[in-house]
Amino acid sequence: MVSHTRLKSFLTGLALYVMAAALIGYFGVNAYTGKYGLHAQAALDQEMVALTAELARLKQERLVLEQRVSLLRAESLDPDMLDERARFQLEFAHPRDLVRVINRN
Image 1 (spheres, helix red, strand yellow):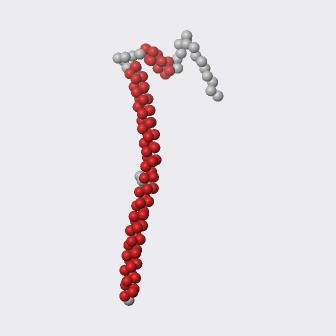
Image 2 (cartoon, one colour):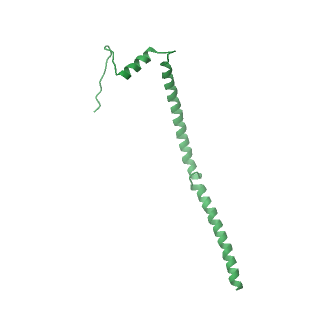
């Protein structure tokens, strides 16, 4: 009877230690391989660099477009820009313009 009680208390203690070790192991593995773990940090850094480069490109593109739009405003209307946009929108060519047709098959 005494040996049965001692065995039961030993197995209970061992089970608690095993469960604690498994829980610590689970969180340790998850900290390394999880979605925001150490292993995923490199992928997040690469994505951040790519998105920063794309943001810089889009800002530059926006500046160019804002400059072109400012040329079309009534205060600073550029006749050449207006002529270019009208010809493009209306698909119009001046009789003295040289038009080259390119066939893309």
